[in-house]
Structure formats: structure tokens, C-alpha cells
Length: 313
Ligand SMILES: [Zn+2]
Image 1 (cartoon, rainbow, N blue to C red):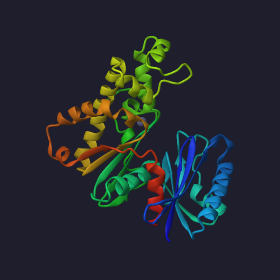
Image 2: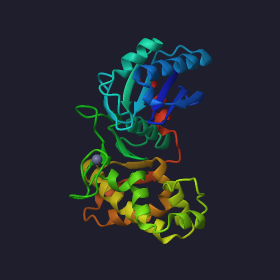
Image 3: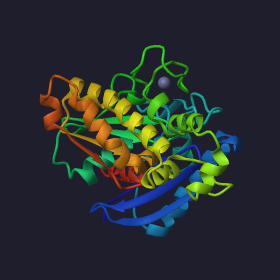
Image 4: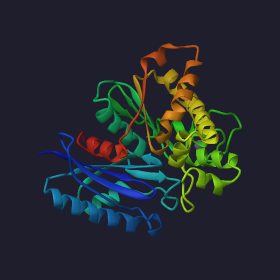
């Protein structure tokens, strides 16, 4: 039996998944990234976990795909830079993992792997052209064009989070102003909500968020569900700004589908009407009519996508 190994390397957690060629999960594991312990320490811990996984499934797996947030040179298997893994610059991760495990690794941007996962699992390869937007702390994007992962000239295609939607707008983590991420990433949404909430303690009590718990995107979705006007207005604003980002993708690429994933998608009920209204304001309607816009319910599209991608290698 053929099987694919996918790894999703996040700033906090690492997920390992092995799928059969029919897409059935055969093995899964997760552990803490702990990037502060250094790159070599990380690669050796991941190497041990990979070898453990290979021993458990007893299959002859020679290739794996790993997705990471950040600027990736997928041809060289190098992480150029990641804001979540600040100390790891120009890190030859694919080569280090090959030395640790004896199998070859394809290193990709994590949103690209989520795009592949959405293409295979959510759309059953029924379309040729689609985009995925990963809405977490930051915003990533991946493109499938003509049924293939589109990486661009230096593997950074699809970075919708850093497309500018407001001139001289809010400061983004990348250093620029007015990026989509500075409006629709969970960090930005929570920051905006906190600036509008006058008394955070009574807000927590009112919406049962709990003293120790942070007000996050999920909490804002719960508050909006209970009718909180502040949360509702923040979600509507998010939907409007997202319509600018998605509108640009529609006009540029005319995809058949756009799949939204990530923690922020918990607010779907509250941002989707404003997103659709924003898109309806575009005077060129043809690309909008053709595109299905859907929210994925799979929280592990990144690792699923990587394992499915490994099956293609
Ligand atoms: Zn940016």
C-alpha cells in the first residue's frame, strides 16, 4: 500500500499525519514546536517523531511533505524567514530532516499545503482553479491553478495577507501598512474589539468568557451569537475588508472556488453577509458569479494537504 506523510510545522504545534493512498488516516501525532530550543534541536526531535511514525505504520515511505508558515524556498527546501520562528533564518530544513530520517522532504508554505488539502478534500478536484485563505493569527493564501499547486517565481505566490487594501492603513506584522492581515487576522480582529470594549472584565462576565481566558476570535464569535453589538460590528468590518482581498483574487484569477479556513472562520455567520455585500459592490459581476466561496470545517487542512501532496511526489 502506498501512503503519504504530511507534517504541519506551526509556531506552537507540529502535527504529523500519515494517510493511505485512499486518504484514510493511518497515524497521527503532535508535539510542541518549542522553537526557542533552536533549529537543530527541533530537527532532531522531529526526526525522532518521524522515525517513530514510520516504525508504527510499517510501510515503505520514502517521501514526505512539510508545510511551514513563512517565506519558503521550496526548490531548495529552505525556510528563508518566518515571523513565528524568529531565530531560524535561511534554515536548510529539508536537508536537515533528510539527514535525521533518511527520507526526502518537500518543504512548502503551510497555506499552499492547506490549498492542496482543500482542493482534494473539499472540492474533490472538481475545479481547476481555486484559492485558499488561511485566517489564523496571520493570513496566508495558496493557489491551485490548472489543477496544480502554483508557487510563483520564488515560491511566495498567493500571499493575500500582505496585499494592501488600505493606503496608509493599520500597521501589519510584516512592517507595511494597510495589509489585509492587519484587518482580518485574529490578532487584528481581537485588537480592534479590545479598543472598542470599555470594560473588559464585565465584558468577560457578561459573555461567560472567564477571567483567565483571553478574548479571542472564538470568544468574539460566541459574544456575537449572544447579540453583542461590538462583536457583531467587528465581524461585519472583518467581512467588508475580506471582500476587498477576495475581490482582488476574483478579478485577478477568476477562480471557481475560494475556501476559507483557520480559527477566524469561526465567525463565518457574522462576517459572511458583509463579505458577500462587499463583493456585490464590484461592478464587474462575472468572476463573482462563477466563484463558490466556502468555509472549511476541517481544522487540519494543513497536515491533510501535506500528506495528500506527499502522495503525489
Ligand atoms: Zn503585511
